[in-house]
Length: 183
Image 1 (cartoon, rainbow, N blue to C red):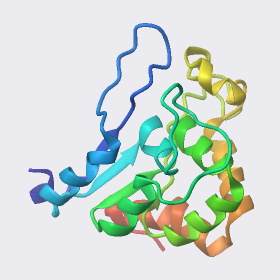
Image 2 (cartoon, helix red, strand yellow; image 1 turned 180 degrees about the vertical axis):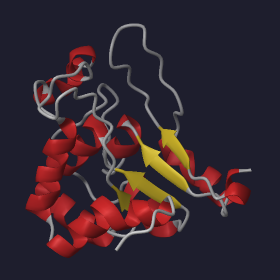
Image 3 (cartoon, helix red, strand yellow; image 1 turned 90 degrees about the horizontal axis):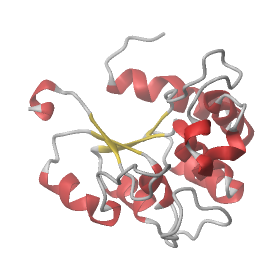
Image 4 (cartoon, rainbow, N blue to C red; image 1 turned 45 degrees about the vertical axis):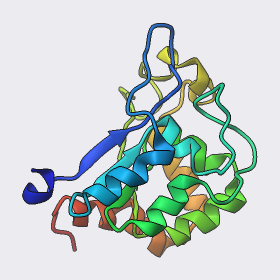
Protein backbone atom coordinates (compact mmCIF):
# COMPACT_ATOMS: atom_id res chain seq x y z
CA UNK A 1 0.00 0.00 0.00
CA UNK A 2 2.85 2.43 0.79
CA UNK A 3 4.38 1.85 -2.64
CA UNK A 4 1.04 2.42 -4.30
CA UNK A 5 0.40 5.61 -2.29
CA UNK A 6 4.05 6.71 -2.69
CA UNK A 7 4.44 7.07 1.08
CA UNK A 8 7.89 6.23 2.45
CA UNK A 9 8.21 3.88 5.42
CA UNK A 10 10.38 5.10 8.30
CA UNK A 11 12.19 2.22 9.99
CA UNK A 12 13.52 2.98 13.47
CA UNK A 13 15.95 0.11 13.97
CA UNK A 14 17.15 -0.34 17.55
CA UNK A 15 18.55 -3.32 19.48
CA UNK A 16 19.89 -1.61 22.57
CA UNK A 17 17.52 -0.16 25.19
CA UNK A 18 18.06 3.49 26.13
CA UNK A 19 16.57 3.14 29.58
CA UNK A 20 15.46 0.31 31.88
CA UNK A 21 12.30 -1.35 30.63
CA UNK A 22 12.60 -0.18 27.02
CA UNK A 23 12.48 -3.08 24.57
CA UNK A 24 14.30 -3.31 21.22
CA UNK A 25 12.27 -3.08 18.04
CA UNK A 26 12.74 -3.46 14.30
CA UNK A 27 15.90 -5.45 14.95
CA UNK A 28 17.93 -7.21 12.31
CA UNK A 29 19.67 -4.40 10.44
CA UNK A 30 22.13 -6.76 8.70
CA UNK A 31 19.11 -8.56 7.17
CA UNK A 32 17.27 -5.37 6.14
CA UNK A 33 18.28 -6.04 2.54
CA UNK A 34 15.70 -8.85 2.38
CA UNK A 35 12.90 -6.32 2.98
CA UNK A 36 14.40 -3.85 0.51
CA UNK A 37 14.63 -6.58 -2.12
CA UNK A 38 11.09 -7.86 -1.44
CA UNK A 39 9.54 -4.37 -1.71
CA UNK A 40 11.50 -2.59 -4.46
CA UNK A 41 8.74 -0.06 -5.18
CA UNK A 42 8.46 1.02 -1.54
CA UNK A 43 10.81 3.74 -0.33
CA UNK A 44 12.26 3.12 3.13
CA UNK A 45 13.98 5.61 5.39
CA UNK A 46 16.44 4.06 7.81
CA UNK A 47 16.71 5.66 11.23
CA UNK A 48 17.70 4.74 14.77
CA UNK A 49 20.63 3.46 16.77
CA UNK A 50 21.21 0.13 15.08
CA UNK A 51 20.72 1.51 11.58
CA UNK A 52 23.39 4.15 12.20
CA UNK A 53 25.70 1.88 14.24
CA UNK A 54 25.87 -0.33 11.13
CA UNK A 55 27.50 2.47 9.18
CA UNK A 56 30.56 0.54 10.40
CA UNK A 57 31.39 -3.09 9.61
CA UNK A 58 32.40 -3.46 13.27
CA UNK A 59 29.40 -2.93 15.58
CA UNK A 60 29.61 -3.45 19.33
CA UNK A 61 26.68 -5.26 20.95
CA UNK A 62 26.87 -3.55 24.34
CA UNK A 63 25.71 -0.04 23.39
CA UNK A 64 23.54 1.83 20.93
CA UNK A 65 25.92 4.69 20.17
CA UNK A 66 29.36 3.29 19.28
CA UNK A 67 32.37 5.57 19.42
CA UNK A 68 35.69 5.60 17.66
CA UNK A 69 36.74 4.93 14.10
CA UNK A 70 34.28 3.52 11.59
CA UNK A 71 35.38 0.38 9.78
CA UNK A 72 34.35 0.67 6.10
CA UNK A 73 31.97 -1.92 4.69
CA UNK A 74 29.05 -1.59 7.09
CA UNK A 75 25.61 -2.74 5.91
CA UNK A 76 24.05 0.73 6.18
CA UNK A 77 26.53 2.24 3.72
CA UNK A 78 26.32 -0.81 1.45
CA UNK A 79 22.51 -0.91 1.44
CA UNK A 80 22.32 2.82 0.66
CA UNK A 81 24.56 2.21 -2.35
CA UNK A 82 22.86 -0.98 -3.51
CA UNK A 83 19.17 -0.17 -3.07
CA UNK A 84 17.54 2.80 -4.82
CA UNK A 85 14.58 2.51 -2.42
CA UNK A 86 16.59 3.13 0.77
CA UNK A 87 17.26 6.56 2.24
CA UNK A 88 18.74 7.57 5.58
CA UNK A 89 17.38 9.99 8.16
CA UNK A 90 20.26 11.74 9.93
CA UNK A 91 18.22 13.24 12.74
CA UNK A 92 18.33 12.37 16.41
CA UNK A 93 21.20 11.25 18.57
CA UNK A 94 21.95 8.22 16.38
CA UNK A 95 22.52 10.17 13.16
CA UNK A 96 24.57 12.77 15.00
CA UNK A 97 26.69 10.07 16.63
CA UNK A 98 27.34 8.30 13.33
CA UNK A 99 28.47 11.49 11.60
CA UNK A 100 30.56 12.91 14.44
CA UNK A 101 32.41 9.81 15.65
CA UNK A 102 34.79 9.54 12.66
CA UNK A 103 34.84 12.73 10.61
CA UNK A 104 37.27 11.39 7.99
CA UNK A 105 34.91 8.53 7.16
CA UNK A 106 31.81 10.74 7.45
CA UNK A 107 33.14 13.38 5.06
CA UNK A 108 33.42 10.77 2.27
CA UNK A 109 30.20 9.02 3.32
CA UNK A 110 28.17 12.24 3.04
CA UNK A 111 29.50 12.95 -0.44
CA UNK A 112 29.05 9.33 -1.55
CA UNK A 113 25.47 9.10 -0.22
CA UNK A 114 24.48 12.76 -0.79
CA UNK A 115 21.36 11.83 -2.77
CA UNK A 116 20.18 9.34 -0.13
CA UNK A 117 20.59 11.39 3.08
CA UNK A 118 17.70 13.33 4.59
CA UNK A 119 18.02 15.80 7.43
CA UNK A 120 15.00 16.01 9.69
CA UNK A 121 14.82 17.26 13.21
CA UNK A 122 14.04 14.43 15.62
CA UNK A 123 14.92 16.68 18.52
CA UNK A 124 12.83 17.14 21.62
CA UNK A 125 14.21 20.63 22.17
CA UNK A 126 11.66 23.04 23.51
CA UNK A 127 13.74 26.12 22.68
CA UNK A 128 16.31 25.24 19.97
CA UNK A 129 19.03 25.33 22.61
CA UNK A 130 18.70 21.92 24.23
CA UNK A 131 15.81 22.25 26.63
CA UNK A 132 14.02 18.93 26.23
CA UNK A 133 13.78 15.43 27.57
CA UNK A 134 15.49 13.16 25.03
CA UNK A 135 18.97 13.10 26.52
CA UNK A 136 17.62 12.99 30.06
CA UNK A 137 15.85 9.73 29.26
CA UNK A 138 18.80 8.36 27.28
CA UNK A 139 22.00 8.07 29.33
CA UNK A 140 23.99 7.01 26.27
CA UNK A 141 23.27 10.35 24.62
CA UNK A 142 24.57 12.36 27.54
CA UNK A 143 27.25 13.94 25.30
CA UNK A 144 24.38 15.98 23.81
CA UNK A 145 22.72 16.87 27.11
CA UNK A 146 21.79 20.54 27.18
CA UNK A 147 22.33 20.86 23.44
CA UNK A 148 19.92 20.97 20.53
CA UNK A 149 20.50 17.73 18.59
CA UNK A 150 19.33 19.31 15.32
CA UNK A 151 21.65 22.31 15.76
CA UNK A 152 24.59 20.05 16.62
CA UNK A 153 23.96 17.81 13.59
CA UNK A 154 23.72 20.80 11.26
CA UNK A 155 27.05 22.03 12.63
CA UNK A 156 28.66 18.66 11.85
CA UNK A 157 27.20 18.70 8.33
CA UNK A 158 28.44 22.25 7.70
CA UNK A 159 31.91 21.27 8.90
CA UNK A 160 32.12 18.15 6.73
CA UNK A 161 30.68 19.15 3.37
CA UNK A 162 30.21 21.81 0.73
CA UNK A 163 27.31 24.26 0.54
CA UNK A 164 25.88 22.37 -2.46
CA UNK A 165 25.89 19.01 -0.68
CA UNK A 166 24.55 20.61 2.51
CA UNK A 167 21.58 22.05 0.60
CA UNK A 168 20.91 18.70 -1.06
CA UNK A 169 20.93 16.86 2.28
CA UNK A 170 19.07 19.45 4.36
CA UNK A 171 16.43 20.45 1.83
CA UNK A 172 16.38 18.97 -1.67
CA UNK A 173 16.34 15.24 -0.86
CA UNK A 174 13.53 15.47 1.68
CA UNK A 175 11.55 17.86 -0.50
CA UNK A 176 11.80 15.46 -3.41
CA UNK A 177 10.82 12.43 -1.32
CA UNK A 178 7.87 14.17 0.34
CA UNK A 179 6.91 16.02 -2.88
CA UNK A 180 7.36 19.52 -1.50
CA UNK A 181 7.98 22.09 -4.21
CA UNK A 182 11.13 24.13 -3.69
CA UNK A 183 12.94 26.88 -5.52
